[in-house]
Length: 421
Image (cartoon, rainbow, N blue to C red; front, top):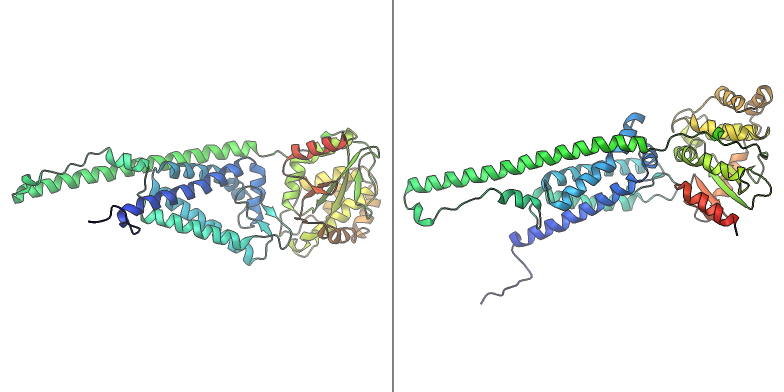
């Protein structure tokens, strides 16, 4: 007697279950990745730009559209609808992701992939390229499996196929050659109808995905954090000179001090300033916190030899010599931030922005051109690297504890909580 169950099941029985597992694995990853990025479109722009592979306009388009596309493809896989197409698209995405990560590693970039939110520059030695390559390669195998064997359990594709009734004539009706040929023709036509229906449904699903991505791209672009100007905040308090303690903005009676580590060439710092700078400065107006700025020059190597990070930090320190102009210049330099791997703003441009911020032209120009504070950011590099688990720029710390700088609300809430203790 043959056993009812065997460890080695026939492939026809095992394959649909493996297909289901591959479908759900890919769907789960895509849905989690897409939803994580949807929450913060501006941050994902920073993550895409960090790869330094796309022109600015295309980086924005990818950042706004990719999360919606990932969610749409993930939903197709969950439903088992247009499975082969969804798997092929997933495979293509994974190849692109692998090329991006491998390229970043080969070029010596230190970035977070941004695969599940976040992203952007990280401190040297904080990358996880090998893990990302292994993970995406394993997912690529799962996608390839579904492209080759798209049938799976609990799939809408099966309902689409079964909506065309495929009849098998009674064997008794196949006794003559003509009857057999007629039966074969009927069966072939029915199978063609089933395949045609699957193709039509697949095309419809593809059209829905494209439309959803286009709509999502427009929505995400509107949701991206607008550039905010700290001039909106009426701060008129003290600003210290650049010292070993950084540049301090705020009143002496503020109960807490917020330490902010930045690099003027860092695109994530620019995003942080655009989204959170005004709200954080408002904490000083309300006498809740002092802001202690530490300007670093980690990214001097990404300014075509002009040492832009050092020059910009020097200009900021020169503005601090005159007090309030530092606050305005800090915002202006991020609002007009040059791209990584460009030569950065010229000294003449730095001087013009400083004058616009309120610094006296002649004295400020002498300070900028004379590099009066050029050694200041280098000292802070060493201090920052000595911090426990320093992740790179930006870093926001309160009482020696890193805050979630990506959430303005988290920073403000942490300050309010500490200020009331």
